[in-house]
Length: 121
Image 1 (cartoon, one colour):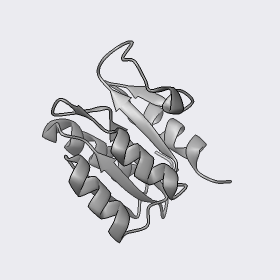
Image 2: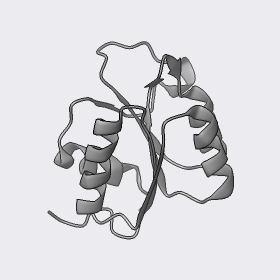
Image 3: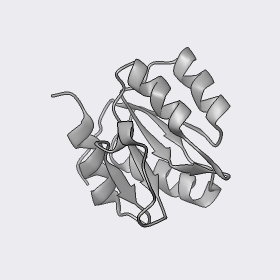
Image 4: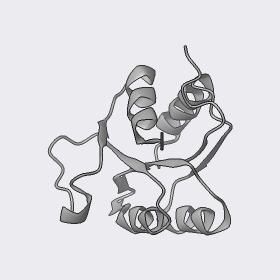
């Protein structure tokens, strides 16, 4: 597989451990320099405050709460992000309707494609 994400620093917010491990493996195969991961909104915001990320991936539903606060923190820093969800037709807040959504389950090709489209040229 091409190293589409070579040198990129990515934040992954995902509360399902098996899915997180799968995503981390995919991102490593895509050449990511570093992957920071967390399962909670508070931890994600703390990471965003402490580090610089090139791109992020947010599970829409984190243990019953949504990840909009994380999305707002990323948007405030101009960090592009994609939502991921296992639910079809999940309603999206108006200000995030233009953001890409990756439907679970997804392939490494789908993940690499959507993330590379978000990166600045």
